[in-house]
Image 1: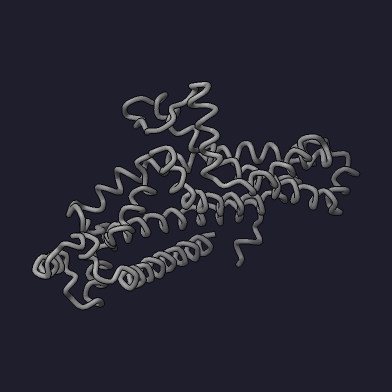
Image 2 (image 1 turned 120 degrees about the vertical axis):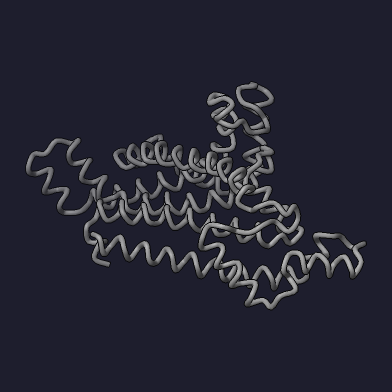
Length: 313
């Protein structure tokens, strides 16, 4: 088990280094001269040269890369080229907002998706099973921002159950915090719920038809115990989808944060991309990859617990 954990940690570190390094060079290639975006078209050549020297952009690219990487390895992502404030401070302000929405959406997807998937697996062709198939078609045909707008119209404007926009920190009010992230989380979770439920339902039916399940029933095991064995063997696919959904929800949060006016990493990514603020983009990339690595690591541990054969890979 220790070697299994060590391999997963090593692969996560390699992924982090490769992705952040690739992002560094691609960002410099795509942005070109950042002083134009930072200063505007009316900036003089003298102002541009002064800003290049101030942000260190006049140094060779490999020197800039090593300087960034050596500092990033210690958790220091440098300073923003626009505000000259530490990138870490901006991340500490923005990341909790996005994480609140994404984690809540993931929990909703897990709880509701698993419950629906089990019921549909136990009763294939039933009313809930048919509703799941219809929902999978409808939800994937509708754009995410449209679903967000519908939720705002129904539950915020008409019913006034939740705020339409804005974010409340849990330090200010736990109830206000839950209220402010509910609609964005539900908007993100709807598609994920359907995917988790479908994967669990399909895996449930596939495992139910295997010989060992018929043997368990022939031995007189109760329906609950048989269902437990079936669920444990059918869960890996659903767990994998749930982990992938977490990564996808991080990307989808950008649109949702714009619709609900949330001060998360989505709006920060958008503004940093528009002006070519590379240190902020690199910090956002590194943090995102860290979350992906952590989620994949936890997924591997869960799969290793559910299916011991996975540990030998």
